[in-house]
Amino acid sequence: MGVQIVYTSRTGNTEKLAEAVFAAVPVKEKNVKRIEERTERDDGEMYLVGFWTDRGTASSEILDLLGNLHGKKVALFGTCGMGNVPEYYDRILNGVAAFIPEDCEYLGGFLCQGKMPIQVRKRYEAMRNTSNTQQVEMLLHNFDEALLHPDRQDLKAVADFVKGLF
View 1 (cartoon, rainbow, N blue to C red):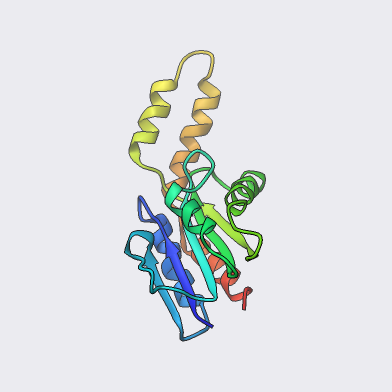
View 2: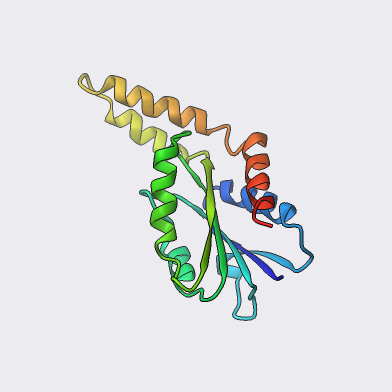
């Protein structure tokens, strides 16, 4: 079974997951590439597609790739700035999975927290005023927590997710 691991990564978070995913795939016929490095000859029976989350979804390149897969087994993995909020993670995965054609078999998805660019923290700090201090403090705390992710525990969790697919 040929496995294609295709991902996009802006800050390196999803790339770390992709490396752990590649190591966890228990078959010899496997390939890992950034989406921009992928060629028409890169094909497999299973696709493990990685993305970073922006405004609750994946990039248009990832959504286009998913929409063009037919007759494949597909699983998703990715990172999100928001901390461990399972309902939010489910909403993201369900929204991205909606782009997978019906003739594919969706195997599920994995999301974990990932660090965000410092500009995000600066934007949060600029939002602070007397009426929203508590809310902004929560956002800043989440940002600071995200700096540690993906961590070893996240990498083990994504590897366990992948091993469960086989």
